Every structure is written in structure tokens, then in C-alpha cells.
View (cartoon, rainbow, N blue to C red):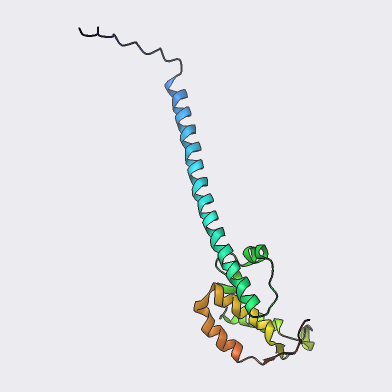
Length: 158
């Protein structure tokens, strides 16, 4: 015995115009696209933040091994990020070197400013940052630092 054939139920009549349905589709697609873009950006931000945390941990360990003070992990992440920030943007360019040399002066301004024999720890931190974040720049920067006259002039902290 075979089952009787069922007759299809007719679709209910449409109460919206084609234009109204088009707007619903367009708005739905825009919302879906916005959510997809947000998901991609959120994923890349999380991935970058993990890399920044790993680099910050590496820098903290290197600074501690050198006997230098270590800033908080969040501070390092905010300032250096995952690529070394301004420190690695062009450490061997003339302007970057001039800025470093200006920081290694007596602190006066104008005609009273004079170069000084800086404490060796003042540049050691910079070298460690470059070593961790942009090691390809380290050799040239190390040669520049080797030409500076530094010494243990600030004494040690107890």
C-alpha cells in the first residue's frame, strides 16, 4: 500500500514590497560585513599583543641579567609594542644618534650645553632594547656606542 500523495501547501501571500525586502538584505549584509571586519581586526590585535608580551618578557629578562632596572611589563608593551617602536624605527640614522648624544650631555641648554663622559649604563639599556627588538640594527649601533666615551661615573645603587 502506498501513501497518498500530498498536495503542496501554497506559500502565504507576500505583504512587503520588493523594495522593502531589498533594504533588509542590504542592511543585513552590511552588518555581517562589519562583524567580519571587526573579527579580523580583533584577531590580529590579540596576535600582536601576544608577540608584544613575549618580547617584553625577553627584554625584562635581558635587563635583569645586565643588572639594570626593569620597567613594568605593561609599560614596555605600551612603549615598544612588538616591533621596538621609535627605538627601532631608525636607530642608526643621524637624527636618532644626535638625539641620543643630546641626552648624554650636561643638561644645560644653549651655549652652556657640553658633552660629558656618560655612565655606561645609560647606553646599555638602549643596546639591550635594540638587541631584543631589532637585532639587525645592533652591529652598526654597537660600533657607534663603542666610539663614545663612557664610564661607571654614576656609581652603583644599593
